[in-house]
Amino acid sequence: MFKQIFDSVRTEISGKKAKDTAAQIARFHRIEVSPHYRGAAGWCYNQFRGYSLSTELTHYTADGKTMYWSFLLPEEWSIQSATLKIGGELWAEFCENNMSVIQRSSPIHAEAEIIPIETIDEESFKNVKGKIVYTPLPLEKVWCTAFYHGALGIG
Image (cartoon, rainbow, N blue to C red):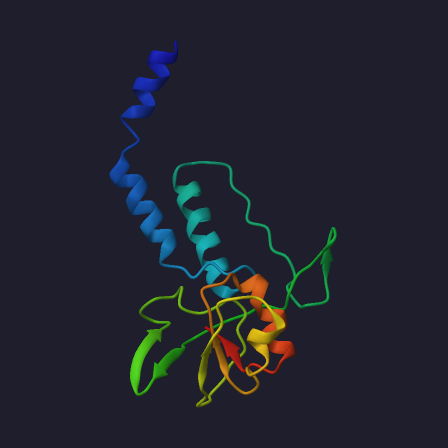
């Protein structure tokens, strides 16, 4: 019986189809509580419906006030464009690489010095006020300390 099911499924599945599907989903910047996430969910919903699968798309209020279980949904975040230029040279552009922006970033238009941070200690952050922190460290380990000390942003 398993062989019969496997043979039936094998005719419908292919590595190319899987790769193409992943590429279609990757077109959307999938930051939760954003129009882009909603677009990806809608695309998946339509694909599933096209395969005659029973599908439901659930919507939640993302206003920065509403709790779902113990999770406070942040306010919906939407980005249209972003660029990073250093010394007049383009380093990153959202429309070319939608992963070049940290989710829920605040808009900023500034010329600022970039300061590298490679360790998480108070001494490293003493001169970040009014500057943009550049770091290979995980964002969750850096952002609170950087903004506490007055950094304009993190890259």
